[in-house]
Amino acid sequence: MSAPRGWAPGWGAVRPGGVTGSARAALWLRRGAAGLALLLAAGAGAIELTPQEAAGRRLYREGLTSSGEPVAARVGVQSVVLSGAAVRCANCHGPDGQGRPEGGLRPPDITWRELAKPYGHRHDNGREHPPFDLAGLGRVLAEGRDPAGHHLDPAMPRYALSGREVAALAAYLRRIDEDRDPGLAADRLRIGALLPGSGPLADSGRLAQQVLQGVFDQVNAGGGLHGRRLELVVVDAAAADWPARLAEAEVFALAAPLVPGRGDELQALADRIALPVVGPLAADGADDAGHVFQLGAGEREQARVLAEFAVRHLGLDRPAVALVAGTPDRGAADAVIEQLARHGWRQVLRPPPEQALAATVADGQRQGVAAVFFLGPRESFAALRQAAAAAGWQPAFLAPAARVSAQEVAAGGGTLYLALPALPSDGSPAGRQAFAELRRRQDLPPRQPALQVAAYAAATVLVEGLKRSGRAASRARLVQALENLHAFDTGVTPPVGFGPGRRVGVAGAHVLQHDPATGGLRPVGRFLRLE
Image (cartoon, rainbow, N blue to C red; front, side, top):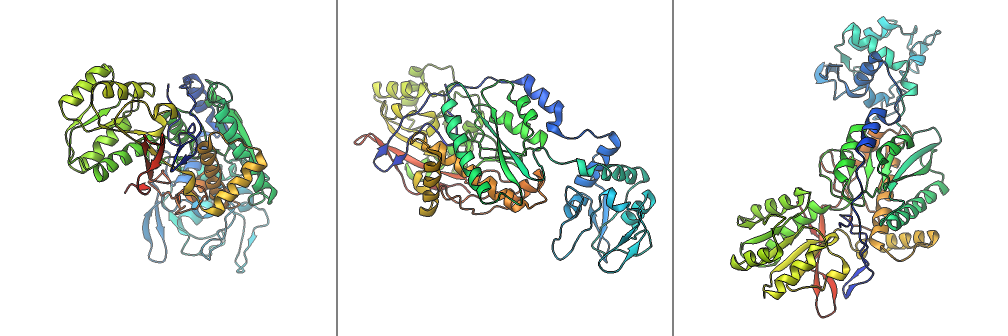
C-alpha cells in the first residue's frame, strides 16, 4: 500500500502539540497503457492538418522547418542574425494570428482572411497596399516589403525561407482560425480535474473537486477571466482508461490531479500533448522544464530535505547511514545519496528491498548506523522500527510523511523525523480567512485538511496563470505565465515561484519530530529550503 506522495492528504492538521485526524490507506491505481496509446493517437482534440499545413504550423509556432532545423532570421537596422526559434511568428502575432499590442508595437492581424482582403489594406499610419498573394507573402517575409513595395518596421524579422516553406506557412494561415488549443472557446475555458471517483481515494477526489469548484465559482461570480467562464470537467482517475477519457474531455489545463503512483506517466503524457498541469496532489515528478508544475516538494525533494536536515541538525559527524529504499521510484533514494555526498558523507548502506528486517537491523547495529532514511513500502515502517527497538538499536528514523500513517508514528523505537511540504500555519491570516470562507460556502468537512489546502493552492496558482495569459490565451502562454510567477502568495502556502527550468513552486519542506510525551509531532526549526 502507498499513500499519495507530496502533500500527504491523509494527515490531519499538524500542531505544536501533536497530530489530529487519521490517515487513509491508498491503493496504487491500475495502469491504462491502452488508454495512453489512444490518447496519443487522438492528439488531444487538435484539428487535423495536411502535411503542408502541419509544416506551416511548425514554422509559425516554433520557427522550425519540417526537418526540425531553426529558420535563419535577420532583425533590426543592423540585420542581427537570430534563430527563427527565438523570433517565431507566434511570439508577436499570437497563437491565433491576430496580433496583440506589446512593448509599444502593434503587430497586425496576419490571418489569411485578413491578408487576402480583396480591397487591400490601409494602415493607421497611412500606408496602403493591395492584398497579399503567395508571392507577396514571400516578399514581406524575406525583404520586409509589402505588396506596394513599402518597407515595414525593422523590428519585423526577415526570414530565409524556401518557396516550399512560404507555401506551407500560407496554407497554415488559411487554417489558423480553426487551430485553437483544446478547451478554449470564446466564452469559456474547460479546466480538467483528474480525480478518483471510486475506490479507496474516492473521498479525497470528492473533497478536491469541491475545493476546485468553489474557487472557479468565485472567479465566475466576479465575471470570469478575460470574458471567459471557468468550466470544471472531472475525469475519473480510478478508471484504467483515464488517458483516453482525458482526450475526449478536451480540457485546456489540469488542476490538482490525484494519480498516486502514476506521476511519471502523467508527466510524459502532459509533455507529449503540451497539456499544462498545476499542483498534482501526488507530487513525485521531476523538477525540469516540462508541463507539470508542482506546488510543493514531491518525495524526491522531501528526501533531499531530510538528508540536509540530518547533516545540519543531527550532529552525527559523517556516520554510516542506512538507506531503506524498497520502492519502484529510485529517484528519492538517489536524492538522499547525492545530497549527503555534497557534504562528504560517502558511507551509505543500501540494503536490497528483499532483505529481511532482522538482517537489516543486524547490519545497522554492526556497522554503527545512526540514521535510517525510510523510503520503502509504507506497511514495513512500523515493523522495521519495532524490530530495531527489540534489538536495542535506537537510530534516528527519517521519512516523508506520506510513508507513515498517523497510527504508526508512535510505533517502535528511535527518534522519528518526518518531512511535510506544508503546514496550516504557512499561509497569511488573510489567506487562511479566504480559504475558511470557501470551505464554509462549499460545506467542506474538517477531514484531510492538507489535501484541501493543496487543491486550493493549485486552483489559485492556475487562476493567476490564466489571468496573466490574457485574452489571447493558449497553453503555451499559460506555461510562459507560470514560468514568470515569482514569490506568488497563495494565502495558504509559502510563496510559490517557478522558472524556465524549475517546476517545483516551493523547494523545501518542514521537518517534524515525534514527541513521545505528547504522542504528537512538532516542527523542528524553520521551513528548510533547498538551494
